Length: 478
Image 1 (cartoon, rainbow, N blue to C red):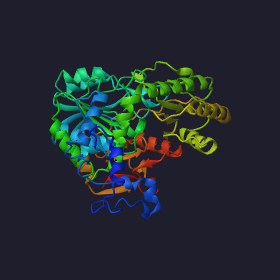
Image 2: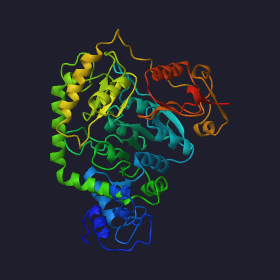
Image 3: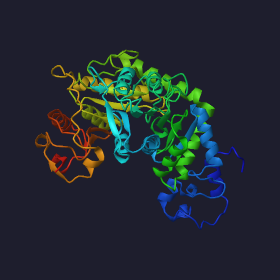
Image 4: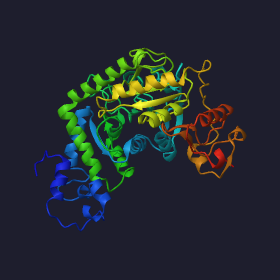
């Protein structure tokens, strides 16, 4: 086989080669066994056979493919991840820290980062992002926030934050890295929603180009790959790469799917060959949407439609690939807007909260999207009408007192109480809306009246909260 042959072609050659399978998996590449196996392409689903390399000890085709990815993204090294950005974040945090280390963590990080703090027994110093006024979403982490925290806590060993956020808000990673690196502290950026950034000039720079030491990016979220595929980028020498590699092997399956790996290899090759044309078309469609979405009276689209190119306080930059649909001026909730788009227009959004919903475009977004979404929004904008009165931003949840460590709290004996009766008690479990998977309640912290009010407000708006017990109760330390 040619060394540069795509992994998917290699798998097809093996499928058609007449081999008798006496190895894993149990379907034996027999697509005729059941219709679902044919639909899923089980004939390409193999184990680590000669010529197909081993993700946990890559030396051949997979090593070559990951080297191609590193060149594409401009990193020092890129590791394929079959357990998504979740596994990448767990491996990155574990590989860059030792048990008991103090770490600087943005409060709006994904639950995977909280789980890493818990599993690794870390001591978190929380960075609270400012709120974007008028929209109620988290703004950018400011470099001066990072600088001050590092000055206040000189023993911090790692900085972790998301950019872009689930809502498409970017932080100034170059300036944050400069502040952290001046003290010898590495930076891990959760770029799960930003694998597309910086690949061409059509979108803002990504975290790798801005100096981040570790970057977790989901290929499947914005680029043409399969769900569960991600990459972990390593750059510079502030982190022990060998240890990060070892941890990456711990936090993902020892039997990685060749279908997933072939998707990653195919994605990288496609971008190598056609990224300029594909990204230009994507940017053109977003521009068309902005023109067609102008004139909305009740819905607001930060960075899009009438507000394309707008500058907002507490926002360094917005990712244009993400379309936030704010319902603060409309007589509907974000959940209701998402439901109406689904039932009336067969448009599926990514997620919804009480006062906004999120539409994610991607490299696969086609020419029909701009008009279809814009026309639906114009129709719903008229149908729902204006809000009955002014809608103010909810109070930002401050940092509650920490009573126990994360790991100690989750291992404690617990009980479930109604939210209003849990005020003043210590959280034993996490509580979050998923998506986006950002914890509202964190084990070991005191449950406040503001949190109880937020839980009630989100429930009344129809937002699904994960972590609640029977009857909407809250898990607290007994």
